[in-house]
Length: 161
Figure 1 (cartoon, rainbow, N blue to C red):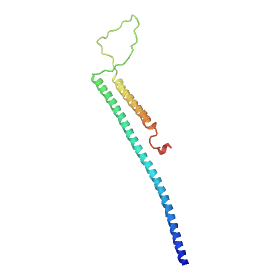
Figure 2 (figure 1 turned 90 degrees about the vertical axis):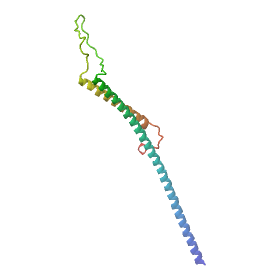
Figure 3 (figure 1 turned 45 degrees about the vertical axis):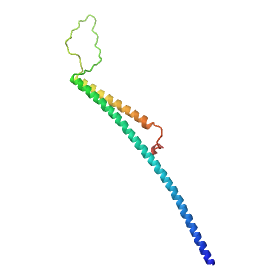
Figure 4 (figure 1 turned 60 degrees about the horizontal axis):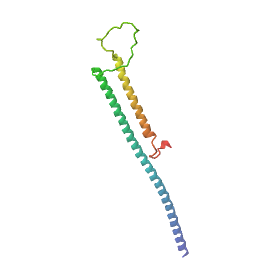
């Protein structure tokens, strides 16, 4: 009977040790699972935030590209109208005053002063570049305001910590 009791105690002890061992492993795995789920949730929020920002940036880009295309179309129409003669470029200029008593030649039927072809092309090139620079600057300022300086409503990004 003594041997049976010892054998039973040994079996119960081994079973208790086995239960303890597997219960400890279960708790460890459960903690690891919780950590992985937390990390997955954080990564999912980060991906959603990045997708939202990507859509916002694309909308901002589309807006300024459309404005730029509209401005360039306006300049092209103006250039076409000037070349066709339906519109004119007016340049503010001052002519030197003639000395008092000097006779002035009359040129009533002379053509009006105008820009040379090169000056006219340069005018439209400069105007185009000014519009392009203004739209680029406005777009960058909007990007900084809307994306870089926004309140931290999204999870913190790894590169910001």
